Length: 318
Image 1 (cartoon, rainbow, N blue to C red):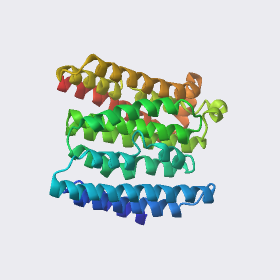
Image 2 (tube, rainbow, N blue to C red):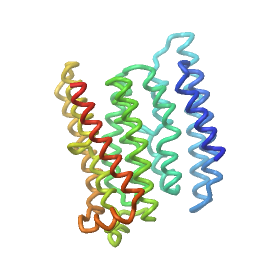
Image 3 (cartoon, helix red, strand yellow):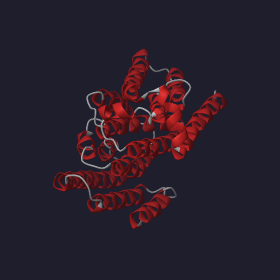
Image 4 (spheres, rainbow, N blue to C red):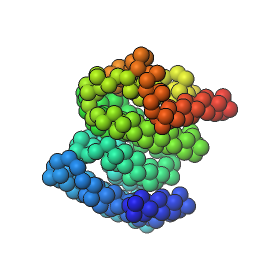
C-alpha cells in the first residue's frame, strides 16, 4: 500500500512539472520504488528473479545517469538531444534494447508484469513526448512495433508474449504523440486499461502458457475480444488510430516507403494478437463465462464502449 501511495504522489507531481530535470528526479524515484517493490514481492525462483531485478536496477541507474549528463550538456552547450532520446528508450525497453524486458518478465508474477509494463514507463514516455517530434524516436517506435511483434510470435508463455506486447505498445504510444496531446493521453489510458484487463483475466484463469488454455476454453471469450481490440481490427479504436496515422503521413508528404512500413507493422501487430486469440476463442463457452464472471463482464463491456468512443472521436476529427 505504501508503494502505491508513493507512486501516485510522484505521478501526480510529474503531470504538473514542465522541467526536464524535475521529471528526471521523479523518474528515478519511481524506478527506485519499483526496484524495492519487486524485491519485496515474493514468489517464483527468488535467486534467478533477484539477479534479474538487480540487472534491471543497473540498467535503469546507468541510463538515468547518462540522461542527466546529456541534459546538463544540452542545457549549457546546446548538444544534440538524440542521446537523451536513446537512453530514455533504453529505460522503457524500445528497440534495440528490449532484451532486458523479455528476461525480467519471464521471472515475474502476473501482478508484477502489469506493474512493470505500465508504471515505470509513464514518466519516460512523457519526457520523450515533451522533447517534440524527432525522426530518431519515430524510427525507433516503428522498429519496436515490428521486432516486438516478430519476436512475440516465438513464445507461448504469456509473460513473454506480453513483454513483447509491451514493446509494441510503447511504439504505438509514442507514435500517437505525433497526432496531438489528446490522442496521446487517450492511447495511454487505453494501453493501461487494456493491460489491466488482460492480466486480471490471466490471473482468474491461473495460467501462464497459451497451451494450458486448451481445457479452459469456456472461460476466455472476453480475452479473445480484448486481443481483437489490441490487434487493431475494425471497429476497434486502434484500427482508427492506424488509419489516422496513414492519413497524417499522406498529409505530411511522406514517401510510399514510410506508408508501406505502417502497413507492415500493422500486419505484424494483427498476426501477433490473432495468434494468441486462436488459442482462446470458443463461442460455445461464451455464455458460461459471461454469466459466471460478472466482474469480467463489466470489463469487457467497458472495453467495447471505449472502442465506440474511439469511433466517435475518429469522425469528430475527420
